[in-house]
Amino acid sequence: MTCKEYKISATTSEDDEKFMAFVKGKKFKQCPKCKFWVEKNEGCDHMTCKCKFEFCYKCGGVYMKCECVEKARIEMENRRRMLEERRLKKMDRKK
Image 1: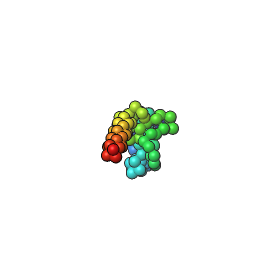
Image 2: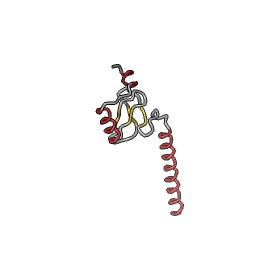
Image 3: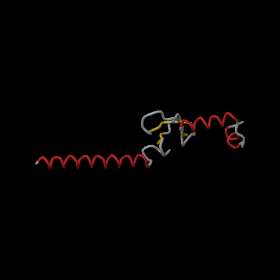
Image 4: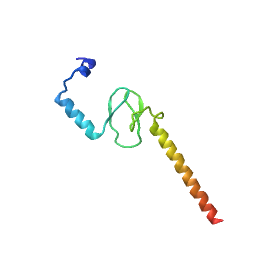
């Protein structure tokens, strides 16, 4: 049976069902490009699949082009701005 035939077949084996239960329980994700199963154990959401495709584990988008990265950049900028404002207020109080 070819991969294409397998995907088309309506039957799923008991092993397939067990595997799907396993990956759902472990929160695996599939590479958006090749569909290989990937598990994140720790660290950031930047994933590089065995097919070399780089994607965001959180949303599945192309890494550095997804909205998750943009949100993180905006949050970092807002935090930097807030810390700078606090620093300036402390300096004003000391005067």
